[in-house]
Image 1 (tube, helix red, strand yellow):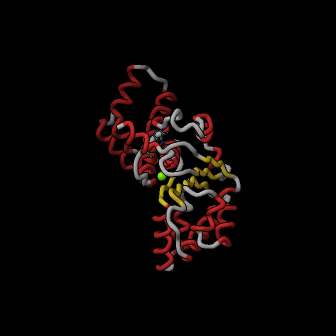
Image 2 (cartoon, rainbow, N blue to C red):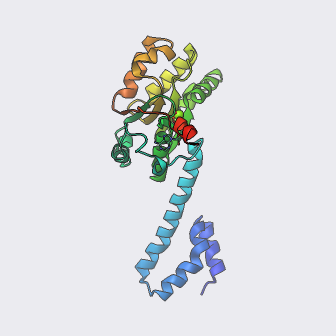
Image 3 (cartoon, rainbow, N blue to C red):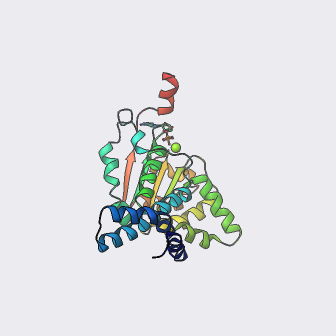
Length: 246
Ligand code: ADP
Ligand code: MG
């Protein structure tokens, strides 16, 4: 009979590391439960697969680069009443990703736009998708840097590898012509191919202001809102509420 050590190193040579580590436990468990051969074979492979899933999700959580972890479970729908839990929960069947639909949160500061975007983003990663979080500012900077290096296409292709791209705070600051053009290229590439979750403090009608030019604002807005779930969040700032009650 092979020793556990020898067996484990054979598993490791096939990169079945998780199985190698748990081999003793799995075998003992199978013996004491008198599992059939087929049950045992199933447990071995299921163990390896689920541990790979877990690792991948952890990795994707890091890659998502959420600036802070905000969970949907912590969102108070009694305070923010212009969106319902049902509306948000409905998105969590993730058909919006398969249908390449966007989610847009519009509202003044503090109404919970970023919280909802990150909350949905975390659930999306947990469901096995790849998510990328960025602020609009950082995104424009990244694109500009790539363009300077002659690598705009490459950068856009790298972004397209994510299933969902969260762009936070579009419209807080005006952008220059170049930034606007690069962003347009990206939105164009994402259109009907990947899902965007967008937060903005500006209503669509005033997007011309920060896009510098209505000729670009109109097609960008058009692409973003076509096939999208739009939430106009009203009410008071949660930050203000916390200040007042403190
Ligand atoms: P916005 O992006 O709309 O400016 P945030 O989502 O950043 O606002 O919310 C500001 C702060 O208030 C965050 O710490 C967020 O977690 C919290 N917050 C906002 N709305 C709610 C809510 N309805 N329930 C719980 N926390 C909230
Ligand atoms: Mg925000």
